[in-house]
Length: 58
Image 1 (cartoon, helix red, strand yellow):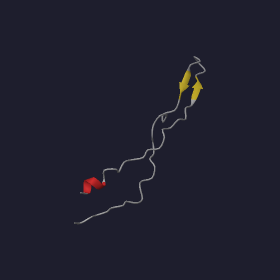
Image 2: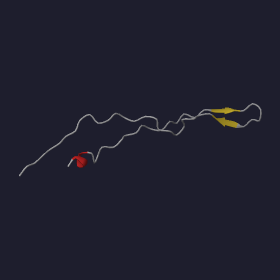
Image 3: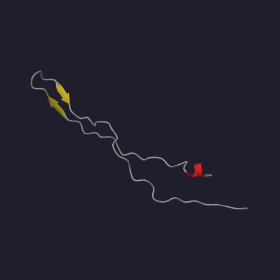
Image 4: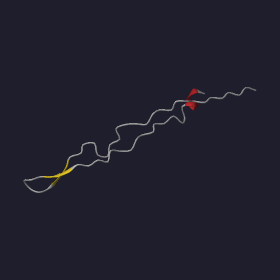
């Protein structure tokens, strides 16, 4: 019955990185997007800290 206890154990991820740095290339005037972590999820929320278990014997 141990696998059943882990049924709802999932990871709660934080929001993706939304900071976007845009600069203009002075030579040709094109936009340069310099944000290597844009759109990446780099962290997770805290894990659960309590687990309830019940056992009923007949």
